[in-house]
Length: 531
Ligand code: GLU
Image (tube, rainbow, N blue to C red):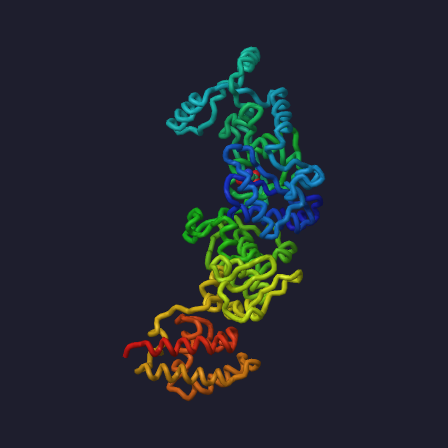
């Protein structure tokens, strides 16, 4: 499809059609995103259809997971199941509902009856065992495992009799022999199939349990779908769906099959390599902006060096012509990099808010309806109250805490281990840790800590800020053989850690009272070191 042709098209309607048989994972998100962008780019409609014909494997919890993940990623559907179920007596938004296949069984039965009446489909009464043995035989002969058409020409009287006896049946499609089926694919060009290799495939188990290819073809027509954008793994289904469409006199649909997503060694992507449910990425502290930006490159690129794309900018720049044929490589480092980028772009207020669940999970803060505060009674109440008023104003302390690590974190979940010392009352670390590696004696350590104490105690509460601290402490540190003599013990005293943000920044966040108290505690500890 040429770019021009696309933009001239009107009334584009695309659908994302997940089966709720598992969590909404990265691959589903990619299919959803490309459909979403295709619709937005050309002013069309994005439809969500729940393909839950497999009643045993379909679960409400997975459906919820799909809804929540799509909403979280920002891909709202124009038509589909309604999240506020039963609003105005309707369970869906849009004029083509219901959008759950389990609620559309009458429609399917109607078309099945039509196909049988027009002799384009037939009843097959073969037992499971018989079907299995045909399959085994065909395979042993190196032939495609197609049904040998045993029931294709059954005498109508015999059919009637078996139906009256309530014998279970499949409804099979009368597949034409030796017909060339040509799929015009926007990504892959023309793909040719030989209908003989398909055999008389089944459309439904009885009338109650219609199968994927059939319901898909019916719904794509009934929902007025103009373009099908889905993974390459569906290519073998496409000729079957085209034959069903033709048999029912439906108009043609345009196809675009997206390339497979592969691991770094170009093998099929596994969970271990990072292809996770979107809800897992969310829990790990990935941002939706980063995931969208990452996922769109799994098969698409803008044709230039630009790497950063928001959902809004993609809605303007995305085009199906730039979707590649070859497999898309999943690179988890790229995702981390993008996530770090988007974390750095957040305002402190936004970042603090995003970090709250992780700090809470880590037991560092507690929350009630109005307020979020450290678990320990660490500071005077007013200095750490984090209030969630109507305007959602977050208090300084939390913002300052996350500001220490905004440049470093790649995932929000990393924050807890980094800032824990700012939220607990007592630090637990071995006294030895206080000693700078070049210090020869405990006296040197005590002297250093005492210097810090004296200096910091002399600063007035209201001037206890980064600029003043930097000026005084660095001047003092320059007097020493190296800065570590002063700053190392200070770091450990304030954090209980060997690695942290700069001790001066940390002192400024902790405030005078707590800083001084921690240095005093460190002096006590230093005295306990046996020489
Ligand atoms: N329910 C199918 C799936 O989840 C949809 C395939 C399609 O888009 O036609 O893979």
